[in-house]
Image 1 (cartoon, rainbow, N blue to C red):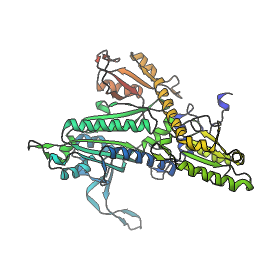
Image 2: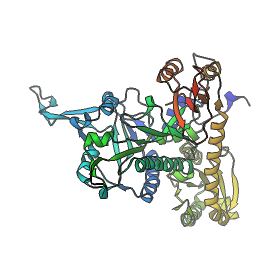
Image 3: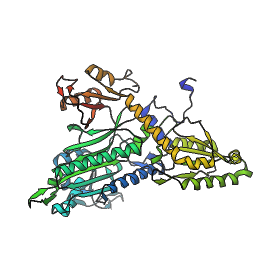
Image 4: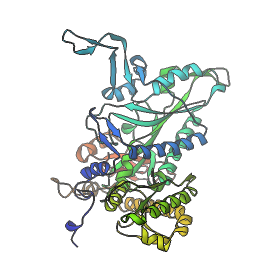
Length: 508
């Protein structure tokens, strides 16, 4: 069968037009849609359900490491923002600013903003400065430390080229903000969170990542060091899956977070901040999706098992539905990864084929069919989303109830293994400038084929080289690995000494 005659649920296919495929999967899976507000999206229940699972699971990890949630204002006075020079410069172009209170009708009855505010308010793009103002009040002595607080919130960063989940003007996230007594404690916190994030994306989202530090030009505005997780999605580009920043004393100075240390002297606190966003939902789509739609890792799926009653005949309908409900109850009593199994019986009055394809496109890990013939055999037909769409396995009902958590685990493990194999196959150790340029240049500039990946190459640490590569190839340093086994060599662009290889890629 030739490639062109294969019917897929999503057009175009990934290898034909990856960006358009991505948009179509989001539409078909009913994750989100553009709204009438430029750059902002509506997150639909299926997409929001994924985010809620991420929220619940991450929040559990934060609590287990001693963090607690609070909530701070959406608006930040302009003067607060201006206190940290690098910070304001980094975010200035992305700020939404509130300048007026109330609306007034003009002579023609048209509404226009009324009285100007004495000081403009910035809609938070991130909350270091407003949270710092509270911390300055709360911290007097070393005994008040550490402060370990997180908030779940929305933020606004004005976006010129929006893309659902990946770049929107308003997005949802968590932002942790901590204050510590010593530099080493704050650095330890930054690492702790990086490791926590890595565990979360690996074990819950089935996403393999490279972790490490950002280069000077890629780090968070105002940070001393930014640690990052970088994943490779299926068009071989990098996507940042989370960041953890060591802020030194920069923001403590700006906000006046001071304490009396153990020697009785005044000292500025050492702070960190860290975050993960709804961008992860987009990462999930690009990481695991296929040409039939979304494929969800079971740990994060809003529904893990959908039961599809086959009720073509009126006389067997009641018995089939009863069997479906009984099966659902049995499954809900079992647990997978610390939570009860999430089951849905799809009783909608919609054709069986249409239903089946809707759930395929939504990426539900397991689809279970029960019809009159299955009832006679006391069996079910199971389809796994990580296997070919048409494949089915028949299994006695009792056995399925007993084995469901194990089957879900198997789907989760398969998705991780598949993603890791893909990443490893497209990660290349590169030792010459020619090979580097060749690796990142498509054969067909008009309609670029999928190419490139992650390049592990030596670099002399110069910002100038970074700029040149960015201009020539749109390639940036994604991460400087933190591992303890540096392999010294020569920068492939200048021949100067280099301490370790860094990870280069095109990115979102």
